[in-house]
Length: 80
Image 1 (tube, rainbow, N blue to C red):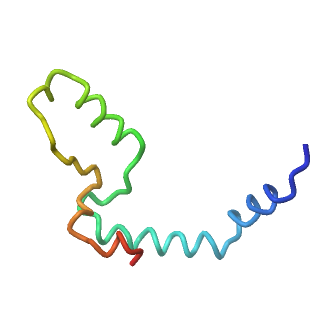
Image 2 (tube, rainbow, N blue to C red):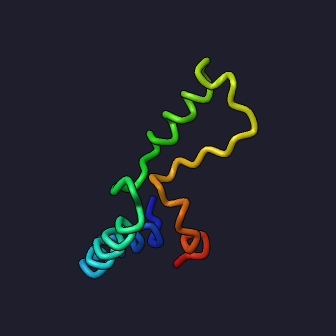
């Protein structure tokens, strides 16, 4: 199967300019994350497992933020 749009997107992700921008954006983002790393899917999974287990039987109506400490920075909700 030949899908030109997919090939173009893959090529765009490999451009050197994009990697430089991504590295700068990543470094800038880390200045706002207390934990000093970007979250991974496993971080959410660990919370889900904890909530499904017995240790969470007394948790009710709580908001649990799995964000490495980004909650104090409301500008992220508006993109900047």
